[in-house]
Image 1 (cartoon, rainbow, N blue to C red):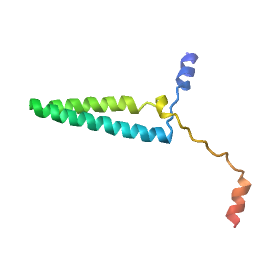
Image 2 (image 1 turned 90 degrees about the vertical axis):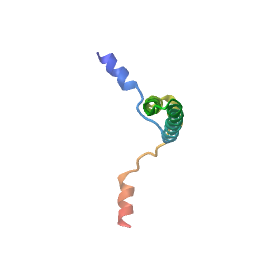
Image 3 (image 1 turned 90 degrees about the horizontal axis):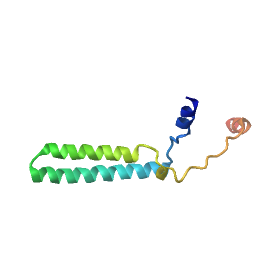
Image 4 (image 1 turned 180 degrees about the vertical axis):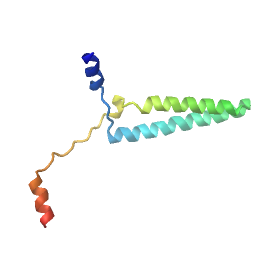
Length: 95
């Protein structure tokens, strides 16, 4: 049982800022593309329900592609600064 927990905890759950932007753009493109195709197909066969089904499929596909933190969204991690000592912050407050 503990090996399963270790495996689940080893799965990365973060995405960097550049990856977040890339995922947002990709989701917008996928949903827009499916919406346009669905609208055209629904107009051709005169069934609005087909438009909604195609748009729903695009939403599901966009969610599967952009919500999980795939490795393509973790390519540029941020280099965080090390925390400073509290002495420096106390001196700044006095000034």
